[in-house]
Length: 246
Image (tube, rainbow, N blue to C red; front, side):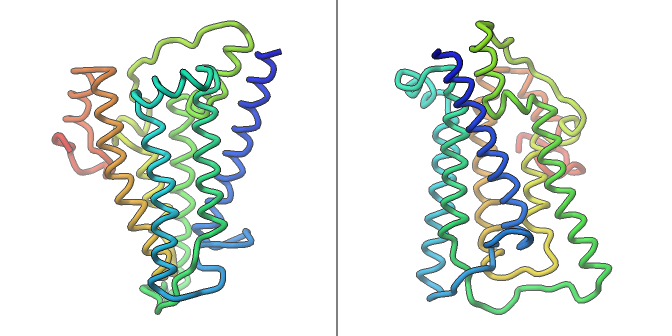
């Protein structure tokens, strides 16, 4: 019974994640969703900015703290190990859903707007490419393990997941963090950059740069010198800039 419940729980958490991920595309792009980054009732600039930064901070803290090995070691004394990753995915999804719900648009002049249809189409293309890179990159490094499904399926079958191995498939040969590259494209490539969108893009970019440092510290702890060499030879996010310890 416990194995069935863990499997059901993992599936529900994954489906919630996927719904939140799809909503993120519409939220950032301002298309096909009830509320995008520029939608909703505007209020005072200072109040709205404070609320938005708090919402972004909630996600950033949750997403980084719960991913750290020390937290996982303590957390799995409460949450069974097979559903630890699914629970992390659940909390991340809820933090994003909260952000979508309470986000406040910022009433201010437009920062930039594409004047020609060709430029607008190019920016929309980069926006779509960014999300595609994100999705493909998750599959390159085991999508279903990243989002907790492999763990609950292994538990249901009474098997163990194989040990993590260091691999650099496709995008990972050119950048160490193609998922963050994809998000950067998706968040910044817009035909119309409003102040609210700019705050979102700047804040998430700053968070990603911090998160990379934390993640790479953990990767060095797991893979040692092999990851250090990889870090020195492959750029962090921008493919054509050599990574020299950064």
